Figure 1 (cartoon, rainbow, N blue to C red):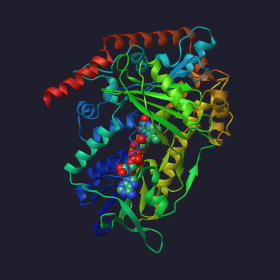
Figure 2: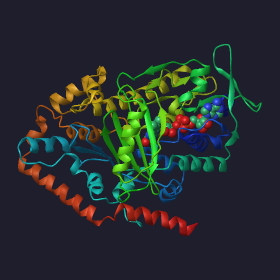
Figure 3: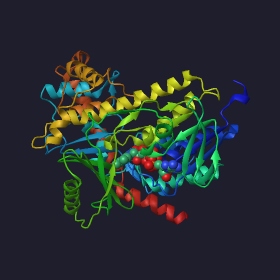
Length: 508
Ligand SMILES: Cc1cc2nc3c(=O)[nH]c(=O)nc-3n(C[C@H](O)[C@H](O)[C@H](O)COP(=O)(O)OP(=O)(O)OC[C@H]3O[C@@H](n4cnc5c(N)ncnc54)[C@H](O)[C@@H]3O)c2cc1C
């Protein structure tokens, strides 16, 4: 490729989290080679304004933007997220955990799960698999993953995530991007001019601008103004697999301390999230309007808030569609963020998919001739990420045994995707997870969800049967002792958060 053919200009339409994550990251990677990044955002069309629980992808992103993690946390009103606690998901009176990071680690290359399972089957262990995770133990005791000064293995490995204020997050990325030369217009794209072969020739705006570029990014959210409305790219609908299609969202005051985990509590037609930020508690009821109309859902949401001592909650309603683009990258346009697809936020994968999408643009970036082989690779990669997440989320619903709710019954009676059927068959028979793709969530995540819902393999793994049971029990008690020691040395998460945010105020 000659320098002449390099992509020299990228226009991003949309200034939500996706637009600004793309701008900051692409400018960091391509800006020094003379690639001009321009972002247009409308002042009249709002951004979705949610997306506050994250995955470890965000920690990596913050690292690449040369911001210290404390600075990042102060600017985004962030707290640590070490796990998700699922309440009432299985039978209606239960809880299980999905922590980040390894659960007790690996023995001779095998996940602790197999040895733990053998001990359970032998009647020698009655603690849950997830309880062997140091992250889960920190959560159970309301502890942070580090002291105010100093690092721990959790921080060094980045096996944690953040809860963050989505508006502050986008504003921080905007500040970084503008400081490093990204061109920004408050304006609205009112027309997309196409070439004869259907690529974008230019975008025209309400105030009379006309912008051309080598590559366009559609970050216009659910509207998908460029890739769908103008270019006609298709949408693969998954509403028959994941039934929720609306959310009621509101912020309420913090309750009993700032928890280092997200809580997801099952309600009659969906589930409600609690995301503790440093200054407020973000909540949202994700539900299916086929099983509860807006009045019923609002009533349930208000009751939930009242039980927490909060009255006069007026939630905002957000409709959404679940599925993915047929082509994430189509001709000279790439969809990033909600324009590219959406899977309900149960495992907080929206921003992770934005981060992965932007990384993949850099990885597969062609020259101006836009060789379709690069574009195909990008599309296959993103499709496999979306499908992996879809199956992982469907798995949560599929394993429920709740009675007395049509929504939960319908959620386990869906036509399960073939990929998930095969993965579960292998797991049920052997305990192995080879059929699951595991690009976003590692093996321990799948074991936490399955064992959390008491779905165990029929047999213990033959390799685990070679180990002496006493040795297995010894290893398990060592893991517990190490975890206890680590947890007792850590500060309360709410104290740690107060210190991080306090320090920031002093510096400023
Ligand atoms: C209910 C719900 C809960 C969620 N929870 C989480 C979560 O906990 N964790 C997580 O990671 N993700 C979550 N997500 C996903 C997350 O919110 C999004 O992935 C993320 O915010 C990116 O959104 P976006 O930037 O693509 O779209 P938006 O935020 O909608 O931004 C769209 C932007 O495009 C601009 N725009 C639109 N049309 C035009 C035009 N014609 N010209 C110029 N500008 C235009 C708008 O002004 C706006 O700036 C959630 C999503 C929903 C719906």
